[in-house]
Length: 218
Image 1: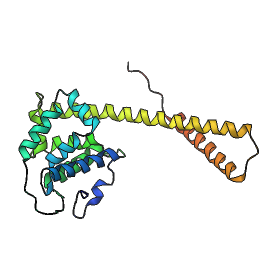
Image 2 (image 1 turned 90 degrees about the vertical axis):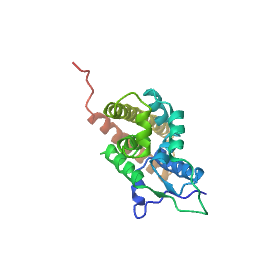
Image 3 (image 1 turned 30 degrees about the horizontal axis):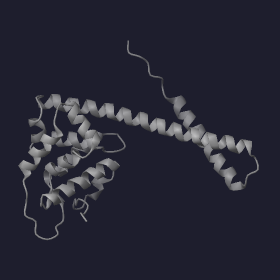
Image 4 (image 1 turned 120 degrees about the vertical axis):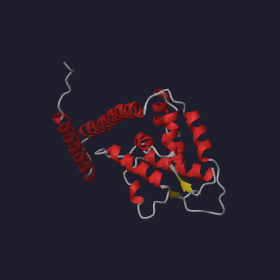
């Protein structure tokens, strides 16, 4: 089984990674293993990113071919000769990509694959950035702006999905509350459960009320 990416003393770099970003780093390690490399570089991260749906959609929206990116990346990093089981360490470039991804995330809760992609583009001296820039007719700044714009749109969609999921959960709990009200003969544990549900509904309602209404631009 492939080991987790090694960062020396800094495994904490992955603490704020989303589940999809963790899958990307695992995929990057698998790519390193497949290519017989004992390190994880920006090229491996890029290959891992190509397995994430949001990244593929972004690249296609920018008229870039994920398949061509994969082929060129593999051509540039080549195949190594690995002897025995090795520890997979991140190269300096890969560490910088992660640092830049953290910077891109800023105050956001988690680091997503899109943050890692932007970090890969910003670390211009390494393989991933060179491949990405070769696959577009846009200049560097334009490409970077487009990726950030896509990221902002994707984050909005994620927030809307999260809000709908919370609304669905509350509807289910309200349904349960209705059942309780119609069947008052319950034990103490159920009463406590109902009290917690009511508290959650009140909290959600207060948060919703506190949000300012969006107004159309004039």
